[in-house]
Length: 286
Image 1: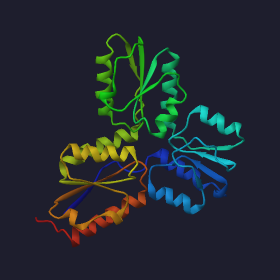
Image 2 (image 1 turned 90 degrees about the vertical axis):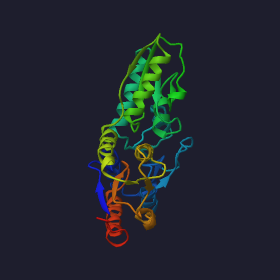
Image 3 (image 1 turned 60 degrees about the horizontal axis):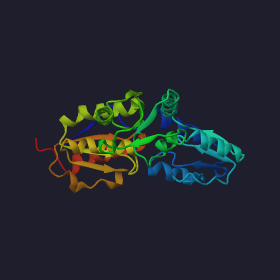
Image 4 (image 1 turned 45 degrees about the vertical axis):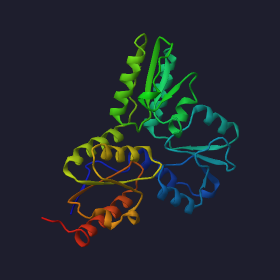
């Protein structure tokens, strides 16, 4: 059995920079992470071990600590004002590309457009974008598209949305709203695009795929779906301990990729375990 890694995978600069900011906090017990810093169980456990308070995905309550860390997924300007009004000191680790998505949505609304956000309505990034808008709507699939009465529509995307999904939903929006001027500002982040393209290049070379990343990570799930749509047996794991030797029986070439919040050490550990499996459990038939 051979193991082939995607050319681009794993942690993006937004997550890397957020973790670097976390490392500079001298007294973790005085800081609450407002939401999940990243959708990765290993990272969250590491933060808990250091003593950080964590509010989870429900941001309705104001943290009790003086310090509040805004996660890479960002929050609305309204939420920032609420926290500052409560006397909180903010450490903002919002990804710059998420900031751009917020700015794009607000620009489209300032142009007099009804804003449509392509993404998951329950995702913290999407909620943060929508909370600063007057009459926005979130569209997850083509089936969510309707005919809106406005003459001008503006479209932005959750930063981890696959570009091909954006294309399909945008086409559905235009078809259902032929009366309207529709303007898209593409806010899908380049790391998401690069990892998707790298996986597409890898898939024709493999007969099985391992995707490493958090179970709640949107971009990781999209990588899993890419493999499944191509008919490739795909295993989604969070770490090397979840690798099951029996799953690899009969595999000739296994591909490896990872979501943008996956630690490099986690990817390396999975890769090393796959190499051991290739040598010890499932030798190549060639």
